[in-house]
Image (cartoon, rainbow, N blue to C red):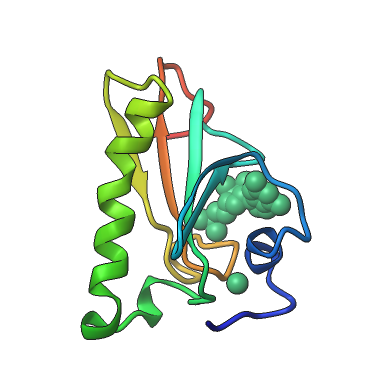
Length: 116
Ligand code: 5GP
Ligand code: ZN
């Protein structure tokens, strides 16, 4: 599985940087965002180092991306979010992506939110 030793999310996946974990399975890790925009704000992260959604390949990664998307409502139910949520995948420089390891933001909880 691809890993970038300088990548902050690869370090979180490896347990070298602590995180508040919500879910872990063979392909995905989910943890709370360190600077949340909403009362509940988690990041769904593939364990494999994939730089961004732009770097995915439909044939190779559609199942992984499907699992990420399908996990979101399960996580929100588990975290007590029952009144709606938002999914964001910032992609590349113009997409506002700051961490170069594919991740899906899932945000919910009562408004107002800090951003968005
Ligand atoms: P991006 O702008 O790349 O879509 O989002 C990166 C997100 O990762 C940001 O919301 C930021 O708060 C979060 N983040 C960056 N570094 C860390 C960290 O070390 N731990 C956690 N839990 N979140 C982080
Ligand atoms: Zn990485």
